[in-house]
Length: 297
Image 1 (cartoon, one colour):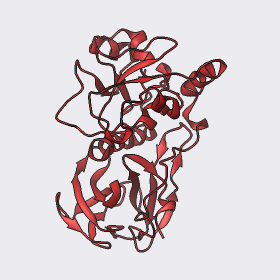
Image 2 (cartoon, rainbow, N blue to C red):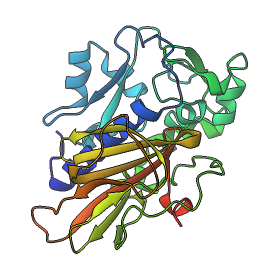
Image 3 (tube, rainbow, N blue to C red):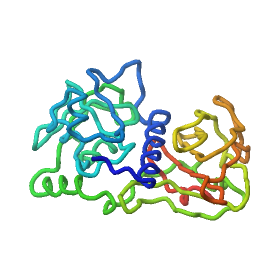
Image 4 (cartoon, rainbow, N blue to C red):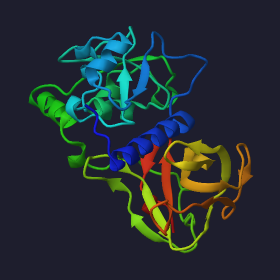
């Protein structure tokens, strides 16, 4: 059964936020198509089991497990996202996979998801431009051959806490010396994985009320409430960079608005059980998480 704790709720909320980031800032373009036959994602709800999800989706349990190689059926968490394969996709036990591109995908992220070498994925799809992936496009995902294949599968199913941080690759020259989103702050939690292996964005805190400000110029792509995250602002910047500001109270901007560095985005609200004010701050490049320490001055 699903673990349902306050920490689990927070991790689930962060997963929902990251899912929204993939929709708003992913690498694959829509191109007017959609993943056919129900292929997509499902979010784990309280009381769910892997078997229950498979039954509701009309997918054989083994097939669902093969398309979610890093998921432990005994440790589902509320808010966790599971891949639902479409009828056109294949996942033979030894590979290669036939995978249908979803919004936000890149060849690199697909390879990492299945525990495959990203370079081998690119080599297996020579006729496909990695920078021009289209949602619904079919690609091949070869697993690493020989003894490393089983090692790769063990890596995919190992506890996520043991994995290294994601590598977004080289950042654009514009992603440098951005200002911090708060004038006076304490870094309460750095970017990294928690004890459960969930990648956690940076968390800042202040002892008094404050306004979160744009770290650099950009456009507001999302400004609204999200369950368990309060009000959220997502900005898109030059060179496919995105920044996220969550746990806000009152919003001070609206969707579609252009902002400059230092523009107030929202008032941050105190947590109900704390006198401190918290701001969750996340950075992305093409949908991939970035350690803010690499960008902020």
